[in-house]
Image (tube, rainbow, N blue to C red):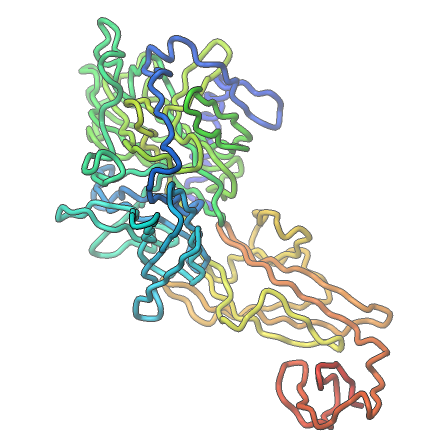
Length: 578
């Protein structure tokens, strides 16, 4: 979505920031920016990447209940309030999902032969319990606002184990997480909450939860054991400035089931301290980069993995000021693609943050918060550190960076926009056959954005991502007229009538079709239009072929008199009555 007022300024900052990273990250060609990835050296081990501390996998016969969160539904452990710029607060870690689309929880249990799933879901103005005994759990109903995350019970013989996503409430107490479907932060703003940014991460983070050491903190301000600090470098074990020369922190996000728009990158830091000389003028620029990952490397128990960066997607820069920045906060960094738009994401991505460890920086101490979890989230190696080498930047996975058996990642967050676009009626289908003599039909749609913001185009490859174009109709077939009527508009969304006017088929044409895509950044919906000429073989009907006593219907599915003129359906056959 375009940021019109800030476009020129931010595009300039993003271009400069990207140029800086490209001086460190070597370009293999003019089209794709890729990192030169080198094997970890003994310096990596000195920094705490000790390859002898890898945990062993749990045996398959050990009963354990666990599931992967639905692809692209990210944890929301923190939020930033509008009236407290830069500060942060805990939130029970909900899953941010796209509304009105199904979600699948992937079973990762071991040692179980039977499963029982359940989730409370919104149904009208009440809650409905959805249950299943399948291996995986797909919630087909349209998630609307805040439903419960799934509960899984795994059974083997007379033994059972259960699992659900946990959070930490203000009470304090362990609570079940919810599925949260607000399309963006503006929608969640209210006079009481004043939510400005809901920060999302691919790695589980909560104040307390049973996934690590029963009741232990799942986020930490400190990193590896002091044994890795070399003599005279007491800050060598801080995950931030002076972390043994690691100048970049990064986190991977898996390909979402449905696209989203990435508006901001957030970096959560602690213990920010400035040189005394910084006083009122000390400023440090923190830069975020977003790259495509063709594949997130699988976590390997014996070898440290390295990611292969794909094409550059977006970047942005924000400033830390000695005069204004609190000692503990989430820094918000708006990101833009090369066209000045917030990027639409439909791939694996890697989000990189750097600048906090720059040579000669007025920052004397800064610590990045990291996740602290015993479970692998199931999408591969998520957390990384990057170090500048003679050959470019080397990134290395950091599971077990804190200690053996702890899966971790830096607290780098994203803020996404997940608008919806769907059929407004359960009776609507994804395609329709129109009468050969022409027909008008009104398709009912529901969306978070008005139709004036949509791009409407014909697509030939339904699997292709929706192209970003200016709003309006693009290459719609001339025989297919299409107009829109927005019925309602509110903070919830718009009911839109898409009025199709399909022209009569010309002589000699037996079939034509078009797949029309309604789209805006973060959402799209395809609708197939077909038209078939009635064949000669059914234009003449004999008395023995046609049972006039059978119910007769027109092409709209309405029952009519047997002698009604036109194209009818009777006895399961198309007929023409002249």
